[in-house]
Image 1 (cartoon, rainbow, N blue to C red):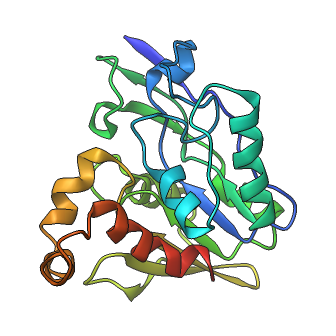
Image 2 (image 1 turned 45 degrees about the vertical axis):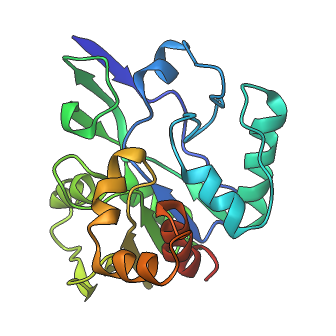
Length: 221
């Protein structure tokens, strides 16, 4: 059985008001066996789409290579836009060396409530996936069972992205469950009525365009 340790600590620049929350990067980032085109940073898999989406939202071109410059570009984008990254899982176990959330076993969570308490400007959690088993929203809900006084209240529950809020001290914090920035989620995107409508109106419209449209509202708030 493989112990899947998260290779990166939380990255939360001073003044962060939006926090990207996922689960774990692929196991090769833990073992250090990166592929050409990977970036040695959060969400650095060459197969992922988050940085492509953010590059388009913030109109900046990001290098896709295992270089210090590629890392610096991503840090600069996050710092300039007050965005942090803190995945839910500190470590877990896997029977197979793959990156599926479904394969995560015995997850140990990061202390999200103390982290949010320390970083007082954070008002939005941006989950890179929903409430399906072992997704980031699913794990956050499971983690909150330690805090029965904290209740997620529905803001937008019946359409994607699902939005909830909860009170932490004097703050209201919003959670947004974005469509996952992965190729595996493309089928789900393709089945959405809104995507079908927009694709019919513009045949060049694709699943990346759809995510840019969805993410933009929340990353630019």
